[in-house]
Image 1 (spheres, rainbow, N blue to C red):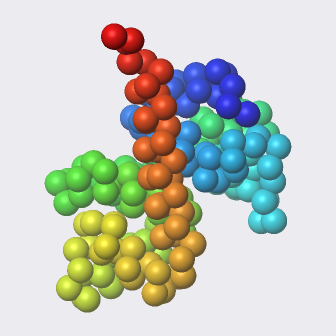
Image 2: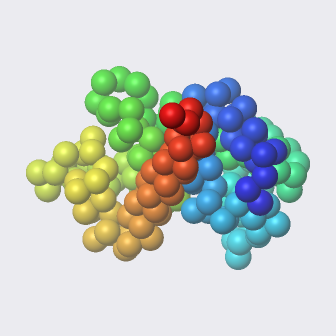
Amino acid sequence: MHSQKSIDLFKAYGEKYDFEYLMLAALAYQESRLDQTLKSKVGAVGVMQILPATASDKNVNISGIHKLDSNIHAGTKYLRFLADRYFPEDGELDSMNRVFFTFASYNAGPARVAKLRREAKKMGLNPNVWFNNVEVVAAKRIGRETVQYVSNILKYYVAYKLVADKIHKPSA
């Protein structure tokens, strides 16, 4: 489902909630391979694999997540809530690590990620850096899933960015 409609929705909600649209598309690809019909064993729905309970929570409050537009809206609004609530712009995290921690929280939960950051600090690792720091603790404590999750999103993002740059580059 790599339709122009999907791209337009990632752009619109990326702009509204201050996320780079290609980063949102990369997360959605990791979550569902961009398949809006997908439903997980635990009940997560659509492209963003958002739980109905999360979508209806007062912090997100988006209904109709079985529709592509509402699904991308709910997932992106939830990401913004996670970023603002758990990873505020207070100078501790640079903008990329703020995104990585937000995405790790989307996968593993913000309380778990906070605990991993505290443990990383105790181990002498930088609690404000995901790669080669907090991800080391995540791999030990919760296994490879969240580590692979964030890593895959970054890889998909880089691939999408390369393609987008090539498409939008004026020919010589």
